[in-house]
Image 1 (tube, rainbow, N blue to C red):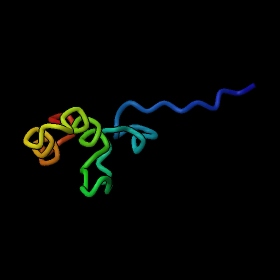
Image 2 (cartoon, rainbow, N blue to C red; image 1 turned 45 degrees about the horizontal axis):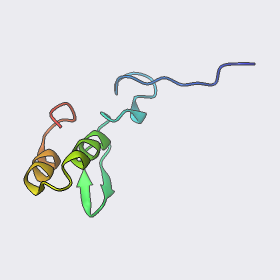
Image 3 (cartoon, one colour; image 1 turned 180 degrees about the vertical axis):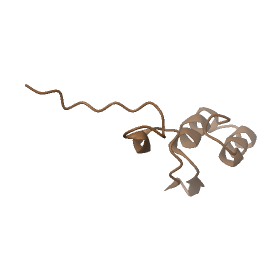
Length: 64
């Protein structure tokens, strides 16, 4: 049986487009998110509009 797993750790390596840090904007919940990492982190502050909006505006997924 062959291994069909793929591994992705960095956005500039093979399969990097699957990383949360990949610069691939998505539209979700009425917002355009720069990365899925921005969306993921903002969900921690869904009840705090200030933090939520700050994360949405951050320039990089690492900052988010």
